[in-house]
Structure formats: C-alpha cells, structure tokens
Length: 365
Ligand SMILES: NC(=O)c1ccc[n+]([C@@H]2O[C@H](COP(=O)([O-])OP(=O)(O)OC[C@H]3O[C@@H](n4cnc5c(N)ncnc54)[C@H](O)[C@@H]3O)[C@@H](O)[C@H]2O)c1
Ligand SMILES: [Zn+2]
Image (cartoon, rainbow, N blue to C red; front, top):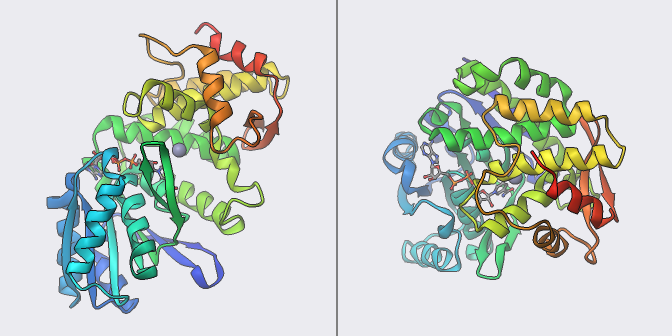
C-alpha cells in the first residue's frame, strides 16, 4: 500500500504526517533528508524491542548515530522526575542542537519527549513516531507537549511542533484491544464534530475496523489526522476557539477521569461516555433531535465503546459538575460545552444551566 502524506501548514513550522504500513522503515531517510546526524530515540518500554528497534535499524542504516533511552510505560512517566532524568541523560550524551529527538510510543512518550525536546537547550528538533491509535489520530499532531504535576494533568508544557510525524499503521497490530478501541473514541469525535462521511464510514465498517483490517485502519487514521492537521493549522495556539471543538465530550470525560482516578477508565472510554452525555445535553437543550444522540450511542456500542459509566460506585452528579467548573478549559467557572448542531458540526455553548447538566448526569441508562 502506498503511503499518504498529510501536510500540517504552519508557515515556517510546517511539517508532514506520513501515514501507512511500513513507515518506520523509511524513518532513516526522513531524518537524513532533514539533516540529522545524530538521534536520541526516547521509547516507551512497551515498544522498545519491536518498533523502537526497527527505527534504530533504519536510522543507523541511513548513517545516523543513535542512542535509545527507554521510558517505563504508563501515565506516571509524564512526570517532572522523568523529564529531569531525560534532561540529564541528554546532557550526559553531549546532545546539541544538531541532534534530533525521536519519540516512539503513545501519547505518554510523545508528550514527555516532546516537552523534553522543547525545553532542552531551548529546543531540539523532535520527530513524533506514534504507535497507538490515540497518538496517530491525535496526540502526535499539533505540538502540544507536557507533563503532569501532582496538582493536575498536563499542567506544565509547551507548544512544540515536531519536524515530522511518522505514523506506521502496522504498529497498531500489536496494540492491546482495549487501547485500540479507546483510540476509536477520538475517531468518532472527529466524525461528530467535522465529518459526517467519516462517521458513516465508522458505522458501515465497524466490524472491519474492530478487526483492524489494514485498509480500514489506514483510512480512519488518514482522515482523522487530516482533520486534526487542518484544525491545528487554523488555530495553532487555541486562540480563535476553533481548536476547542476538539474537546467535544471532553468536559465530561475530564470530570470522570478526575473523579474516578486516572487509570480506571482509559481516556477514550471516558471520552465515549462524555460524548454520549454531550449529545444528551444537546437533546435536552433542544439543539439536536433525540435520534442523533441515539445514533451516536449505537455507533459507540458497535465499536465496543461504553456510552455509560460501567456499574460500580459512581461519582455523584454534583461532584462531577463541581469538577467541570474547575476544569482548566473553564472560563470564570462558567460551564462551557462543545455541542452538536447537526451530524458533523458542533459549536461552543457557554453559560449552560447547571441543573440541566445535573439531570443529564443523573439519567438512568
Ligand atoms: N498532546 C496532545 O495533543 C494529546 C492529545 C491526546 C492525548 N494526549 C496524552 O496522551 C496520553 C495517552 O496516550 P495513549 O493513549 O497513546 O497511551 P500510552 O502512551 O500510555 O500508551 C498506551 C499503552 O500502549 C502501549 N503501546 C504503545 N504502542 C504500542 C504498540 N504499538 N503495541 C503494543 N503496545 C503499545 C504502551 O506501552 C502503553 O502501555 C495521555 O497522557 C494524554 O494526556 C495528548
Ligand atoms: Zn482526547
């Protein structure tokens, strides 16, 4: 299969997302063409001996000297401690601005290594090599990098655009099913906010997508990455409000993740439930017909994503709304949501009566 190149247009910070099977094998020539002589591969421990080793081979074959630094898998690695360890390792290796950083893994390593690249020596070139679906359709694109503090997720970070994104869709074959399915929630999101054709494709090809048919996986990654690229190129620093539409379902999702403790639900699972809530809220506010909310629920179910919280102890609606009011995307404590206008189109709605939100959260399945 041929590779697809999606441009991210950002003037002097423009770059390409290369998508398809076998992209890893071309990483050496891509970095060489960009002038890299040395590379530090920062790799998730879960892909160290597989995908990171393949990149290492390709870079060396292209005459680029390499050093690989593994990062323990898991969200806990997006920490100050881990960033400091990487800074010291780069210093010990005498890394200078001619060295390229290559981030191999999911959003955890992409965010961490991206932030280390942004901050070390006031900025090193970084390549994002996403190996999870979340990273290929979302986190590797757009330049948001960062780490967590005890006081909150992604509280320290920088906008730092990569030199390029190398999304090898074959790497997704080794992803655990729950991680893959979780990533599909972000793809549903793109369909709901921007692209009814993508949503219809998810509906008609749900089985093939779940079975990770290569052509289906490639098609949804290409479309999602293109949509993210286009939003980012029109609102790089989240200033016009356009990039905010990517937070569809996320106000609810962040509250669930926060209330349940990170790691109980995968991010995409929380987003799926959050999108179901957002649709129900839009219905109750008379913005969309109930049929659209049911349609989204049906798609989530077809993709094996949750549309409601799993049974067990649940946070109260009041607690969730209090968390939403404290969300860093909230302005002056006013509740803001991205809500559907119609399939493939959303808008930012502010100042919603909290009692309607409480009712949505308290509804029975
Ligand atoms: N920067 C952004 O714009 C942005 C956007 C969305 C999410 N994020 C961040 O991304 C992170 C979540 O990323 P994620 O969902 O990719 O999780 P992740 O990076 O934790 O990866 C999930 C798991 O998959 C394993 N893994 C990765 N690739 C694999 C492969 N090909 N085969 C087998 N196992 C593999 C990893 O070892 C890990 O255990 C969060 O920290 C979130 O804040 C950032
Ligand atoms: Zn998300």
